[in-house]
Image 1: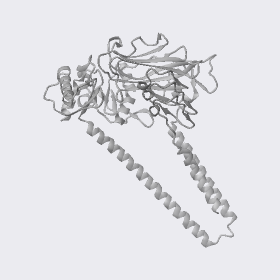
Image 2 (image 1 turned 45 degrees about the horizontal axis):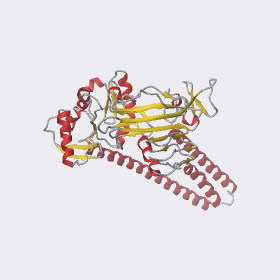
Image 3 (image 1 turned 90 degrees about the vertical axis):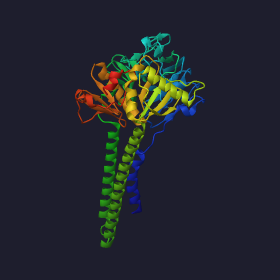
Image 4 (image 1 turned 60 degrees about the horizontal axis):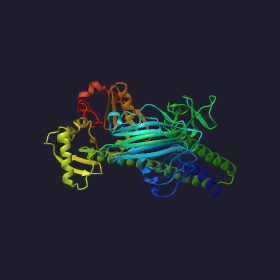
Length: 486
C-alpha cells in the first residue's frame, strides 16, 4: 500500500518539478577584467549580456543549446576584440545608464561564429540627437572600410527601415559624439547570422525566410524579426510559449490523475474481499480530508496571487504618483567645480532663455542623477506641464526634457514606440499618453509579459477627444504645438 502512495506522489509531483526549472542567466558586467567567458546553458531561453561591463576583455563566445537571443550593451565593449555570437544578438545603449560624453567614439566589431554566413543588422529602436547629416551624434555601420550607412551614421528618432547586410561575417558598429557636450543616446540593434538559400533551400535544421535568407531554426517564434520580413514570427507561431506550457502542464496533470484513478480502481478490485467495511469508511474519510486540504491550499494560493497583483499595481501607482511633478533634463554636463546652487541656476537659465518659460515657475528640488542627467521636481503639476509644453524650443540644442516614469512605464512606452513611428510615417496622428498609445480611432498598450502590442477595448476618436487630452509626455524634438496636443 505504501508503494502505491509513493507512486501516486511521483506521478503528480514530477511534472511540476520539470516545469518549475529556473533558467540561469550570465551577465558580462560580473566578469569585468576576466578572460573570455563561455557560458553553457542547457534549457535557457535567453542570455542577457551587458557589453559595457566587459571593457578590455577578449572575445566572448556564447554556447547555448536552446538559447534564442543574447543582449549586449555597447558602452562596456568599446575597443575590445571582435564579439562572437552564434545566431543573433541584441545590441543596446540607454542614457538611463550612461550618456555619450564629449568627443566620444565607441567602436565594437561583431562576427558570427560561421565564416560562411553574413551578418544582417536591423534597427529596432533609435533615439539620438538629430542634426544636419548627423554631424554631431551618429551611429554608423561598416564592413571593413565600406560603410553600410552614411559615413556619419544615422540619428534622430525615426529608425531606418533598411535591413543592412554584410558580404562577410563581420560588422563594425561605431557610436560617435562629435559635439562639445555630453549627449543622450538610446538605441537597440538586432544582429542576426544569415545566409542565402542555395537552390531555394536551406541547410538542415535551418529556417527559410520568404526573402530568400536562411536563419537558425531556434530563432523562429522568439518575438524578434530575425528574417527582416517577419516570416519567422508568422509561420507556426499561433500559440505563445505560455499557452503551450499551460497545455502541456494540463495534459500531464490529467494523465497523472487518470493513472492514479486507474491504479486505485484496480487495487480496490483485487483486495475487495479482504477489505472490511470499516476500512473502506476510513479510506473514504481520509481521501475526503485530503481533498478538503487540497481545495483549501488552492484557495489560499489564488488569494495570495491576487494580493500580490494588487500590491504590485499599488506600488507602481505610488511610484508614478511621486514622479508626476518631476522632469528629467538630459545634456546638462557636470562641471568640475559645480555645486548644487550652480546646477539649479543652470536649470533656471535653460528654462528661461532656451525654453522661454516665465520666471514664476517654482522648483521644489534639483538633483543631479549622473554626469549629464538632472532631476527637477516642481512645486505644482501645472508648473511642470508648462515647462514640458515648451520642450520643443530646445530643438537644435543638446539639452532634452523628458517626463520621469517608473521603469515599468518606460518599458511599456519603449514597446509602443515602433507602432507610434509607423503611424507617424504614414501621416496618421499618434500620441503617447502615459502607458498607452492613442491613434485616431484606437488605443493600444504593451504587454510586458508577452512582449506584444494589444488593442484596448475602449475605442476613442483621437480628433474628438483631442481638446480634452491631458499632456503627460513630450517626445524629443517635438515643438510646443505638438506637445500641447497630447
